[in-house]
Length: 102
Image (cartoon, rainbow, N blue to C red):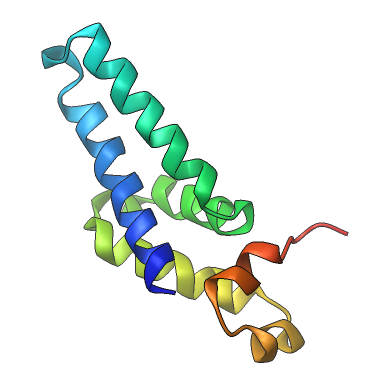
């Protein structure tokens, strides 16, 4: 799960940078940061991203440091899995294959 934590931390840092330095960046820098954020989001499983976005919007998630938010996201995603999926989950790739849909 370490790769997912690293990706979530990276994503959160990019988002915080974009929000705080918006007025100080050139259009080219904003575009590069936006592209980088989109690339990172594209590598994180959608199932995990939905939990990340929900936590990020909460009051505690907005105030949390990137590492804590990443760990809380993974814990919430893990707890939301059915018990049989949790037992068979052995790696990031297993989680990436999982979808919450029908």
